[in-house]
Length: 161
Image (tube, helix red, strand yellow):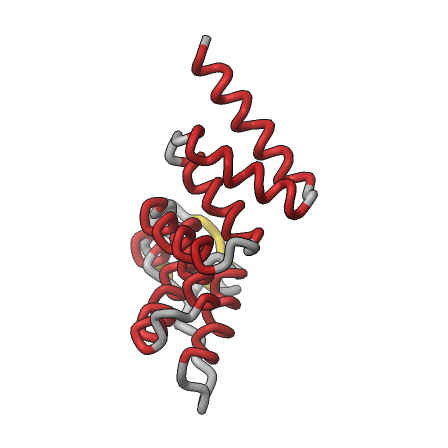
């Protein structure tokens, strides 16, 4: 975006004769929700919400996911996206609820298991997080998953001192 900070606010545009917005007005600017014409239903909600989450717009994604989940409450893909959105917003208890549902329905879902462990870790529930993180690390053999196990083990050990 072309613009300059000024004492009055943020100047938008290329010419100094253009309008100056206050910082509050500038902060209120937001991208409109992305809606593809002719695409309605849970399948389009999934695609659009995924794109929004990849761009780190969890509020807008949740606005699409909630109605689609009301229509299909057992849709694991939509629940995965909702858990991701809750994690991005640090709504960890809500994320935990969806992640537990996902792990209960598909114990082999590595992403859900690791994300559940991370949500528990972020709530400082290290002992609850460790089994999920360990299982995800063994299932995936991913470096980040093993690092999470090591990190939580160290946090538990440092608590005991």
